[in-house]
Every structure is written in C-alpha cells, then in structure tokens.
Length: 296
Image (cartoon, rainbow, N blue to C red; front, side, top):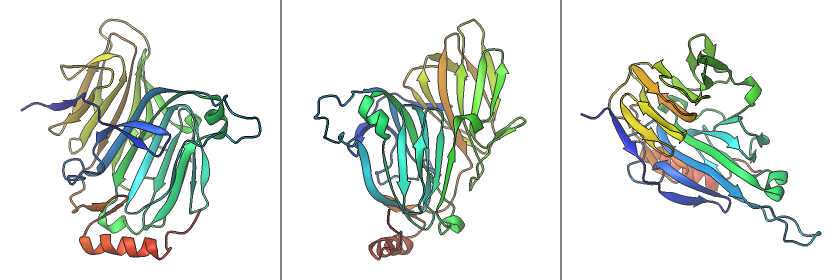
C-alpha cells in the first residue's frame, strides 16, 4: 500500500469574483467529509498577479473583488495569507485585514454571516496574491458554539528552527516547546515549513501523533517526503497514519503541513452548512431564513 496519495491535477474554480483557487480537498461533492473529515475543504490560490485598477475615472470607486455576504454553520474556517491582503467582516461585529503571514480563525458554530474581499489599498494598487483556506469540521457537541473570531498576526505566530536552515512557523497546535496562541476546538497540528537555503542533505524528521492523518502542500521547491519525490504544486494525502515524517530538500522550498485527529461523527452538508444529521441540516436552513445568524 502506498503511504501517500499525490495529487497534482488542479481543479480551479472562482470564489466570488476575486479569487481563482485550486480546490485540493473537495468542498461541494457528495463525498464531503467521508474521506477527509475533519478537513471538509481546502482551497489554495497559488501566487497570482492582481493587476492595478488604474484605468478608471478619478471619481470612480475601484471595482470590489470579493466574496459577498454568505452564511456558515457547523464548522470553522482557517485563512492563511502569504502575499497580498484580504479583508473580513462578519455578523458578530468582527472585522480586520489578513496581511502576509497572518492567520484568521473563524468558528462559525451555531451560525454566522461574513464576507471577504481584497483589502482596499491592495485592491487598487494590485500585486501578488497567495493564500489558503481550510474548512474544518466541528465535533457534534461543539456545532452550537457561539461564533468566534480570532485574528493572529505574523509577529504572534511561534517559529522555531529545526536545523540551521529550516524554520517552522506554527499555525496551530504545538510542536516541541512551542504552542499556538489561539483557541482551537479539536486536537490538531498545522505549520508552514521553510527550507531557507540550497544545500546537500538538508533533512528533518517531524514527529506527528500516530492518530493524525497528514496533508502536505508543496508551495514551492523540490523535495523528498518519505522517499516520495514531489515539487511545486503537489499535494500529498497520507493513506495511512504517520508517526514520523522525513523531509529532505536541496532547494529553497516552502510547505504547508496540516494534520488532525479524525472526527467519527456523520457528515450531512449542503453548501455552507455542515451538520451531523439531516434533521439538524434542515434546521440550519430555517434558522438562516429566520435571520438568526445576524446581519453585517
């Protein structure tokens, strides 16, 4: 049996009118959650040039590039920005800008409405945009939590050197003596990993819990992961539970790694609602139509 499933065929789709993403874990198929729970969806926009909005009259507002108001219930969204800036507003009164290196963690819980768009200055001046967004299921007993919003800036994200040329930025969970500063609802591990220099025999071994299923996105570079040769754009899904992952690179390389304790609860979904039974799914629609998710 192969230890990893390697995906390198990209399924692109537009999210709103501003984000053209690669869908690496399906979010709208009938199989949502069956293979990857608690990871329900993983969208990634590789480095993409956003042109400036210069061909307009001085009195005209720049065209907004965004995802308009929409609801979520029963799960969390994690947004990681690598370049460019994305702004957020929600029905809980939260808002802010996710700058390069920042992370936004939004717990939809019992229901929230939000919108995302390119930050005003970046939308006007343009530049490179790169980001990832992961939908994470909530356990049955936490689906009715009050909505919760956490914005973690790059300066607050723990980092540690695994050797003299490899640094880990810890997005969630803990590793060695470093611990993620935000509150999460289930055991998890998530990190950016950077090989900073070219050189021979630059290898690391990551000690991951044996009950975690592991996903690895190669954002740039060429590497070997447990003897599997991978390169820029490849996405690895562990076909078996891993305890120690060996990664080697002779190139400057960037990776996103995430792993989670599997959630055994049933998954019933329709669009932005993810519940544990058909009854609760139908109730989510009623709550949304009745305005119980609030307004922005």
